[in-house]
Length: 414
Image (cartoon, rainbow, N blue to C red; front, top):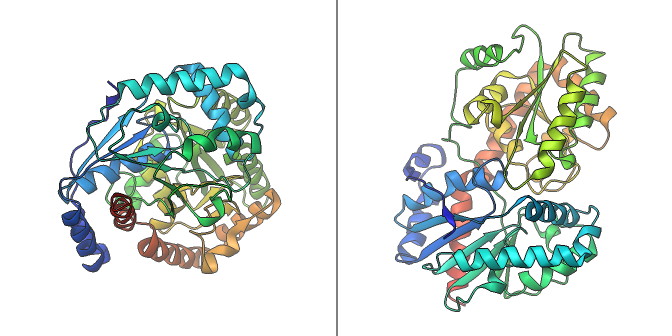
């Protein structure tokens, strides 16, 4: 059997203090209408990525309104995950040549077929996340359940060969979900296509309110000088996050802000073999500068430490070249932290109004905006307030729960 992630139940009612009653009441009504329905999410890793982080909060909150929701994780070896990472990259516009090979096709199909045989099918709805397990529906013998494919990446300009390879598997689903309309391939034909943005959990260890003095002590214990300004990027170690561009932004900004420090806080996941080589390359570059610090989830920097970094630092960066959504944008804004980010994918939907002035397309522009925010703290604080309000309105977990349960209801109704 596939591994099931062990999760408890969190209290959705706490969100009434933040969001009021209307949305929570709407979710409870949907839950009553779906009572008895069993839902299962499936993905490729239980830690280290945005999907895993989202599900670890999302599922316990859904359970708190009386619904049955579980999480299964597929198996795969290094060869399989090398192929799926290549597919992931190609769907975001990268090189798709590996996907065209006969050996690649055989390995992808074989692994998905093996995982399909090991699934627990005692569910009414399966929600399959991202390309890695997308072929599960094809190899499943389950004809009673409804199947939803959820794409979390930027597929606005995919490699055509890679999309042509994946599309037949996706078109066997009852519904497909994308973060925004621009990501929906025009030639996709499924009965239901929906768009919904991810969300963050305001009460998780990563996003709960922590005293800034405590956070500065925590970062100091990790080697950060609390008396000097700090900028930060939190992301997977992935070329699409442009970590070397972030280092260059830091170097340019430090010319105007002496003493500036940079922290690169990254996560490594079991389904991303490329992440380890990227981590090594980033570490090699960071070792050239004593004010560039690299931290990972594999060296004790987990959710609480990320919270501390985001609370203690002065400006966040998210210099993505491609980005499905970028949970770290909402995480930083929720803490009132100003952010300079790449003008890519799902980032602009989080940085509206005055925040949009800090969407950048070049490294020089990024450095200029970072310096401006470091030198104009009152403006930075105002942007932080605006950002937090935007997250409150649009990107907290109850909104996502409402959207997904509404889709489940539609799909079950045919």
